[in-house]
Image (cartoon, rainbow, N blue to C red; front, side, top):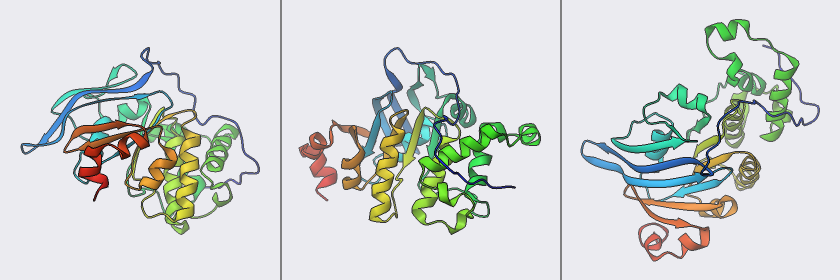
Length: 267
């Protein structure tokens, strides 16, 4: 599979997928969401909303229900009760692939990239046009496709690594590549689970800038434990505890909330 070298950044948007907008100004609305595992409520009657182009960070102690919430939004886990609406569309009964097509992208904590392929090849196979048996047979590597790959690579700071086998990237670069693989799919909402875990301090700074840049055009929900990183990116912070919403507001507001200090920040 040929590779591509980006000579200059492009302003071309990765994928233009027409989607409805929510009249409420919220891209995601979760209401009274509950899920139980063998009688244990991992998420308990949780309600929250994410605005268009908002960068929301969700924090909380281990077992608070953070990852389970993302699992339910992307369809990996089905809730016991409650509602998840993405731009007014109910997601709770949709399979994962249909939720992706609606415009929701999910990145897990451990990077899942194809290490034997180059950066360019990883980005190429993530394009919606390359998915499926028939699509892959008739997929053409057009100039438009090349520009998408170059544009995304520039955004994720890997424009000079397009020929590099992905297995040779640093841990942080692998995280960026997986974010780039999501961006090629054109999501309107990105769900990121601990995106800076294991990164160097410099990579964390670069990732903060990357996520803030992405949030200029998309909504992001980020699960994170690194409070310095949270301070550097968050528009708004939601704190979960035992599957429930404990506190919500600016970084300063939640850091000074006695309940948050007691169950999370004080430890």
